[in-house]
Length: 240
Image (cartoon, rainbow, N blue to C red; front, side):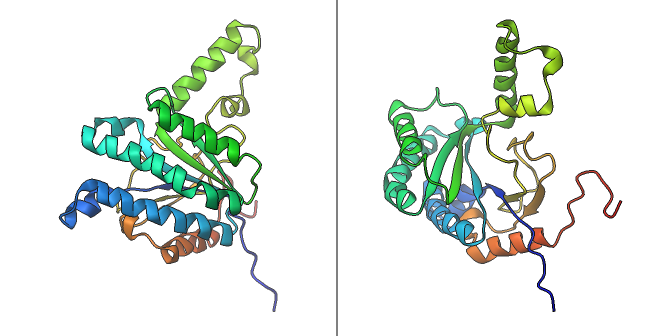
């Protein structure tokens, strides 16, 4: 009997939702939920390598998240700094390349320095690319890309009639990274929350009821298994 064909899954993107609500439901500070969620990240990174995922993008902090309380935002920024420091050795040893997308000018200098440092330290790793969307918003990304294209046109480096979908992609934060095959959102919400709108035009979606702190490797494996069972048409008709 022939073996089933395993569909490639090159890029998984995850909206890690529900940390704060998970904590509140248990009478804990919201930051406790974020810390629990950070521990899950490590498990999913390692599982991605085992499952053959080459690119993993995680939505850590959106441009809208600045509207949260100062205490929560400050705690999150501290958590991001601690995560980079705590995980740097393992990422180097396990061949994980780390990148960040989103605006950096609103972030504190120490965090930005750590982001630049870990990107430089892991630049040659090839086992998995882990992209963290930090102070990221899809509409903001498209606005910034449009401005950069406009400057290129003004400077004579680009003609308006030469702008294609590929051109736009090359001006995005994710330039050089393949579009997501699968986008997962946890916590039972059914919206995409301004996450990779251009890049995810033809992605498959999986909406998971469990909050991110309760997400498991088994749920991740099931989402990928379900993805591999789907027919991806990309606007065409199968068999035509």
